Image (cartoon, rainbow, N blue to C red; front, side):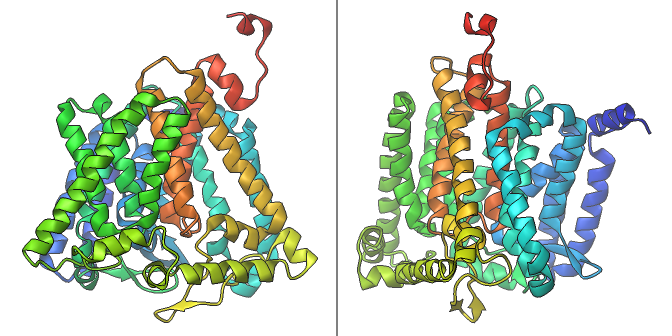
Length: 503
């Protein structure tokens, strides 16, 4: 088969036969794994519906990415640990296989256009981090096995920047992605509302995992991030993809924010305020004005929900504490209060201890200070419910512990390059109101929220946090690359020609 025919094949596959076959396989596995008939029937219906829809609309490589992203975003930690067996002792991780299949096919289809990404300084930083990690793995893998690969995934999963980059190279691809994201945010909201019955879902869910069995359902690690991002999306992007009345989209944004009363993700309370400040500082005053009343309505909706629950004496368990008129103020106070109560709620004292452990061990000698402790060894000495906690719940500190000063400097440079690229695009396209530009403003807000979350959680160390973020950042870099030349100059560091400069 010639390269041109292979490209034509991947472009023309509309996933009909492939996805229906995959659905049959999934349904067969589900019927064996799920003991409850109703859950199996539900999975069959959802699988058939999704496969049928995708088969008519999406190329195979895009379908693989969309299904993978759906699992990572909505089912998060449970989907991350979903495996389809082992080959020579190596676990076949479903989410990774889907994403890498989409990446490989997308790269083959657009490999000439994708080459531009490797000229971007951010991608060069990722390559440097991959090289540093690979040097460590030469000695770490024989000693620690798969744990070393798991710890190094933070850097190797950055390859999904390429998947996002090639996604946005075709016209109309952003509209397709935005339609899917709207569906995802609604699905994430509905799933987040099941948190009070999460333990029941775990009991009825199949369990699998690379190192220990993890229930597929009943996991809610980063749903709060997508709750707030979904509210922003409904305000700024959804009007491009649906013809719903404005009050419906505003209501959907408010309802999503109100779900934080159940998820009780403290970093996202601060994150909402931070997004308002960022949008104001970068000159997006209109979007800032749209967001402020929605935040107010969201807080009012949370308060109303608490009042109703308390008045009818209904017991609803949130992520941290039971929802009642007395418990919620305590939880809100814990965002700022440095008290024992805060320590009990958020294990903040533990986090301070983890920071001290990582700093002490990494700076113990010159070698670890410069090149880090490597991969496979837990960075902290701590257990929760008998399970070792391996990371300090701060991704940048984790990079410092693994790769030392050399690695963390490259890591910070990567984020500065990406942030600068997004910001330059927004500034240089000011005055134009279109879907791509508004998507970039939303992406910047999402990026701010994700970075904030990574300061208090191991967001980049787990696939359900890293994979969607890297993919979406890749989309942003691609939009900056394919933008008008004025935006491209700032984003990719190319010097404009005399003719271009005079335009």
